[in-house]
Image (cartoon, rainbow, N blue to C red; front, side, top):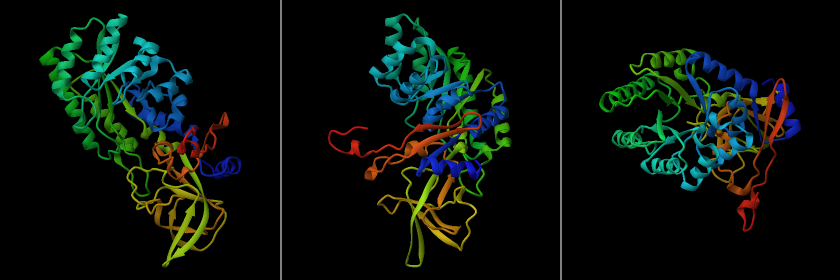
Length: 396
């Protein structure tokens, strides 16, 4: 974003503040679609940033929903069930029943466990309604099912009149920087799908694959998986699979990160033991870069107003929390630091607004706004007090 736009956001909405540039979001999504090819479907994992869900629903083929709350967001926004993949490691029976009653067979559902399978089977039998399922294959963690359990579920589905295996779901983690790691994962899934067809005559026609592409959060660190060349490499790997079917690539961070800005103002400066500290009105409860540990790495940032100059010094930027862990940057060289100026942390469009310790010290939640060149500014959430939920009888 141009500095004039950022300065306008500060003057109108104050700080701390999240700004999501929807033009950048669209550009990034189109870059990914071009890199992976039009033959590859795209799925947005809305947990990365639910504020972007409405926009992303018009840009991608599918939205991954991992909780009842996320489903309620989609229902409120009027996103058609046909666009939804109902996923998540936990599906409570009462929650999945409500989703099933609303969506029926119009969306697709992942199966994470035997228990989840039985919930879906019971509902489909009771309503004589076909459900389309994606069986999740584990990557060696708590998600999905191992090969033996997977095979047993296939056998049960083959005996059902109303359940259909539409695809397989495979995701093993995030911030993967190496194309070689993606190659190994794709090779494993390719082999499993081939064995499944040979041994059980189970011909699965769709693969939902989460590559967990790394985002370049820090200066001087550009993961190969995020580049245009990396996307082309992933496309080639998918095309070389012995299994032939339709692939949908599922991502959240890779779509959302680049469009986000976190703005926080300098409220105090001090020097302790020869070390310069800059205290801002935000903190690491509102800003999260995967891989950052107590400010060791330098994120992409700038300071406003840009026109001001001053002596360049080395600073440790700390937030407003009463913990020594609240360090946003450590040992970073900045010119003209003074109270009233604003630090702009870039590439903060994924997870930062969601993952932080929002209730710690009862600080208010920052305002969230979006910008789009054709539609201008839009308030997505106003500044919200949290203290009411930290006391008896309180609520937001």
